Image (cartoon, rainbow, N blue to C red; front, side):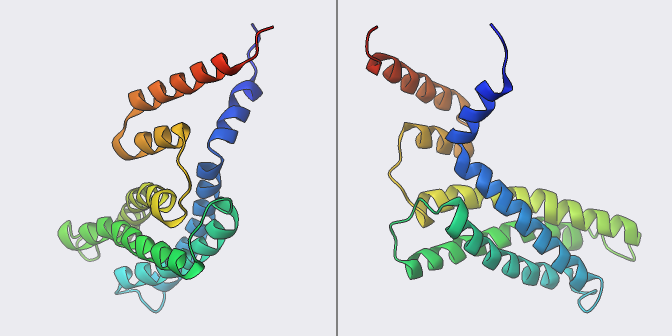
Length: 192
């Protein structure tokens, strides 16, 4: 038996194409968010990093809506645009709050800011809390909420397996669902 990356990568990409597109949009908006955040934080909003993060987050969310609507979830929907946009921005607002929470804790609970720590430590703490921890929390929440409520679709077994994996760590349930899907496919094949 010969191992082929394509034999595993292509089915994975086909099965999780929305997640892959969502991640690409996330990477794009991460660059937008980072550029605006650091531009503001290092210039006119130096003493107010949380305000800089809110502004950069809002701009990134607008870009995210356009890219997700037109590319990541373009085959989904069923809602009127104004209702879809309202839900998108509401869940994104919750996501912005989730992404800001670690930065707020870093700055105001752990006091990781100048003069308590050096400027280098402050910037590293800001990056880790706002971008790594905050964005991971935001990304998981937003993907789940967008698929579930903003861009709804009829959920099949594969979608329930993915949702179960993302929301509750239900890897075992996801594997059971995948095994059930494969068994059904094998039964449907015509006999040779």
